[in-house]
Image 1 (cartoon, helix red, strand yellow):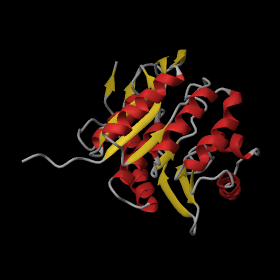
Image 2: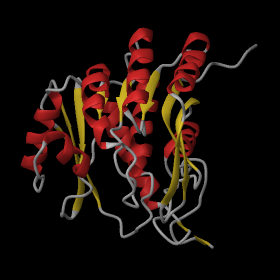
Image 3: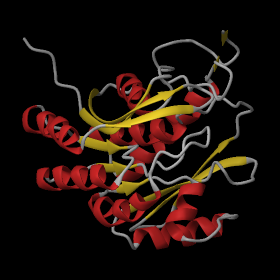
Length: 275
């Protein structure tokens, strides 16, 4: 008797050599949440907890081959995009996903690394909006990304709502506004689109070990969608997962340490330090 097939999730993103973000964070999240993870790598970065020191973009035709190889044979119950880097890659990804008729598409509009290094070229922003956003079930910007996408500063939860309305105009069905950058006692996120906004708040954790938070959150949403949950439940459960991953994060390296992606499978706590 064969084993049941786990939900299948494809991540289209960059590789983080330090293991805290990008493809590596996505795969860890998928394993922790009971999914079968697959990858299409868009860029190889030389990266650690301090900085991104080099980026090598993968040729668009190779990105297309990776996506087609996965979807034409294995298939995917959900797809997540992360670092796409330039317009040619975005156009290629949008064509492949559009041709495949992907439904559960989570778009994380990755623009800047935790270290401040640029992960999306300026000229590619409009391409991302025009080509990929209309295909997305949900787009998941943080505050700095939403400010770029909406074109104005975000200082309050009301500003988050205004920005979400603006971004919904680009074509995604839902927008998850991540409010971790706001000055508040809680980390407040909102899901907008098609219903009363869903407000999700969690206590802030006193830690700098938050490298890869956005990648991990969007991957978790894709996983819960792949398990068959609706968007509200998927985002709610992903919020619970990311909150605990931050709570159980650990210090590694000299900069922003990683989350504990595998907390459902391990007991490593945030008091442990690895030199």
